[in-house]
Image 1: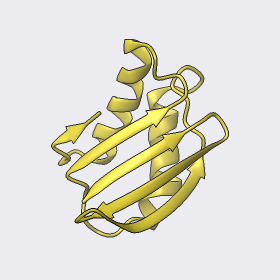
Image 2: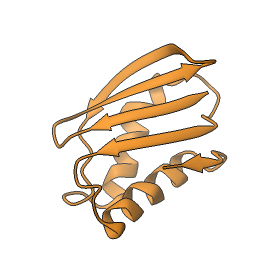
Image 3: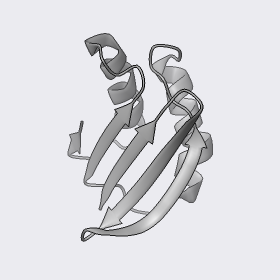
Image 4: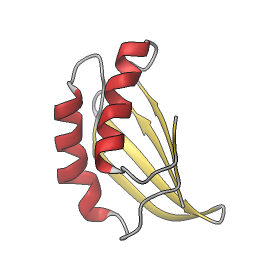
Length: 92
């Protein structure tokens, strides 16, 4: 399965794809690494995303979001996603 996100400062849309077809769509509050720490992003993912996901971890995650134009911001998002999904092979 593949998890794709489109995030702004006010909301994040998540799509879980299985064999190329949409398996699940989820909305959470926005994630913006220029305005939030990786710890806060991790907290939001635990509280809002994880309870809505199927039991398995995605094989790949593609995160597209506001504030992801700088290496430091990308590192904050990556750290949070790696904390939540330690078995995911690829995070972009």
